[in-house]
Length: 254
Ligand SMILES: Cc1ncc(COP(=O)(O)O)c(C=O)c1O
Image (cartoon, rainbow, N blue to C red):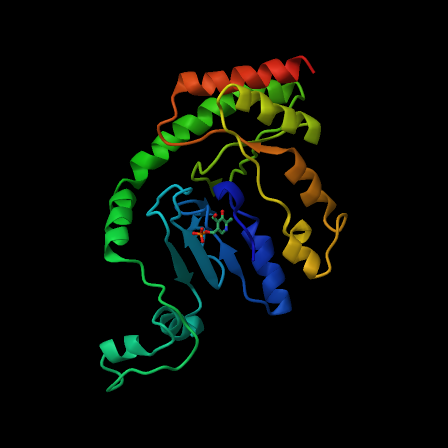
């Protein structure tokens, strides 16, 4: 289950080759990767299944909602049943059975038509939304690049063979202490900045499965130093400037 974090694709060629070698299915978590590409292919369309999110925190939203992309035909029929409360109603609608009935597990996963309409308008404005987000992303990137060159922080890396969707802007700070101090300083200035995720193996459920601190040292290290900067379509340059100033002041005086 590769996660296309920040709408930046995982190395899908390598992942698909590993999956093929070991006879595994690949489910892309493309929750953050709608409208982004890897080698000219949309994220979510490369593995057997792909999942999109239209949650209010994403690029194209309807409050709560998502989509399942099915690339492996063997999963289509069951997905339709699960979506229809565990019934074969879809077959009935197509005239393939004379009545519909309960055949499997399921729930009521249909998006309401009002939410679908809200989402559709945004999908129609995809280009505009992407260009607004690109402006915010590039302003952070260009203005923070000199700090990266001097070794004060690390910026997102976007490989040449991918197209990102400007989902978020994160930075990696030198230490956990600096990251936490920066969150505090921003907060004192009325700016909310968050980090995520807590590595799953350190969550209560992860621990229940027997994992412990030290099992995934790279995840633990990066998650302790990562910070997401404020990011939304209409964020203004002077607001971004303020975030950057606070960041610079803290890092240069450290
Ligand atoms: C990487 C990732 N996976 C899954 C999800 C879940 O998406 P949703 O809230 O639409 O179920 C999210 C969104 O929070 C996400 O960022």
